[in-house]
Structures are given as structure tokens and as C-alpha cells.
Image (cartoon, rainbow, N blue to C red; front, top):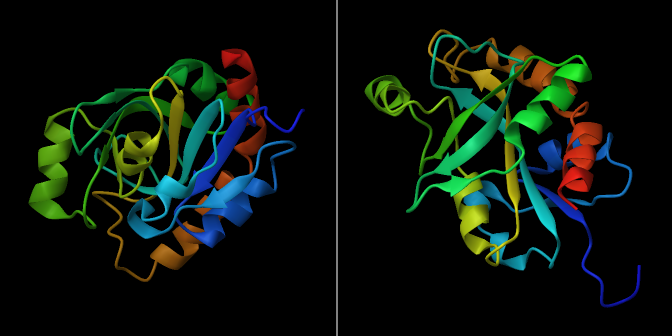
Amino acid sequence: MTGDEAPGLVVCAALRLEARAVRRGLVRAPALVVGYRARHAARLPGCRAVAVVGFGGALDDGLAPGDVVVADEIRGGGKPVPCPGARTLAAALAGDGLRAHVGPLVTADRIVRGAERRMWAADGSRVVDMESARVAAALPDGVPVAALRVVVDGPGHPLLRPGTVTRGLAARRVLARTGPALERWAAALA
């Protein structure tokens, strides 16, 4: 790569814990921390594709802790952002032995519970996070984005309960296995 060539894929996560986990499976792509609610998203380097990864909250009962949701659309904060190759990425994750699902992701300002969770689920959203829409909004036009969330909590598994630690550790192990599929997704876009 010459000095003026943009890297292919940049993977970003809100938390260092998430970035360290996904970094284990990456060969070429860097894994960067954008901070809680993506407060450092504007600092992302130029690149040809971005993947936003981490933990998320399920919005429907069909998802279980440890499932991976690949967004086909990112909602929240304005016009929905399409995610090219979502089904291809989900198939690659499934081929790597992960339970992968495809559907809309919504970015919220805070942890959602109860009625708010049901409201987002009613519009068809499958998973919620607090970063993906903000990262997508910070990207230059034409840079493809993927959003991938490993479910930690959901309608039947509230976030603020003792089982969250166990579910979080399991989700971290799943997230660590997503890197190869992410790099294959980015290569397929080229």
C-alpha cells in the first residue's frame, strides 16, 4: 500500500473491550475505539469501508443472547442508511458457526427498556445500539458501512440483571469470532 492509499476496512467499536475482542480475528483491518455513543467517530481515518461492531440489545423475542444481528439498514438520527452486503456478511458469519440474523438496527440515545423497546420492535427493528447511526453519519458519502451487534440483552433478558455478566462474557467470545467474516465482506465490496 502506498502512503496515499486509504486502508480497505476500518472496524470500530464503542468500548475497548469490544475492539480487543474483534481484533483477535482480524488479519489486516484495524479495530478502533470510537467511544460511548460514538463521540470520537469524526476521528475515523479515511478508508474504503467501515464496520461498526459490538454488543447490542435485542428488540424482538426471536433473538437470544449470543446471536449476531447484521444490519441491512441503520436507523436513528435521520434518513436510514442502507448496509450493502448484509446478507452476504450474515451468511459468512453463519458459515463460521455463528447464529446470524439480518434486519434493521436502530441507534438510540440511551439504553431502551419496556415500552420504548416495544415501539422500536413494532417498526421492524431487530436490535438497538448507541453508535452505528452516529458513525454512519460521520462517514463521507459513498463509504459502505456494516453494523454488526452481538445480543447481550433483550425482552426476556433485561440488561440490569445478575445474568448480564455471563451473557456479556459469552457475547465477547462470539464477537472475537466475527473478524474473518468482516474482512471477507470488505474484500467482496472491492
